[in-house]
Length: 104
Image (cartoon, rainbow, N blue to C red; front, top):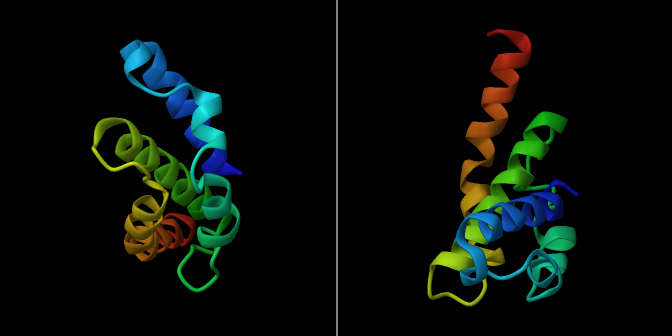
């Protein structure tokens, strides 16, 4: 849910700032492989985070990177690249959340 919600929020934000140069929010949600990626690829238990706060950060990061790639690069679809990038950052995010929680 945080992935789809952050795609919508960042799409609205960039639409307000840049106007018609970015795709509208509803188009962002319903186009490409976003729903497939959000429900099947981003929730892979091997590479995803396991604490609730880390999951929210992971999903928000995926949404932000997806919007950046879709709107500001020449690549047509950014879901796969966003998930791959955030999978690289999943372990540092999770360890940061554990350090914050247990003050270790």
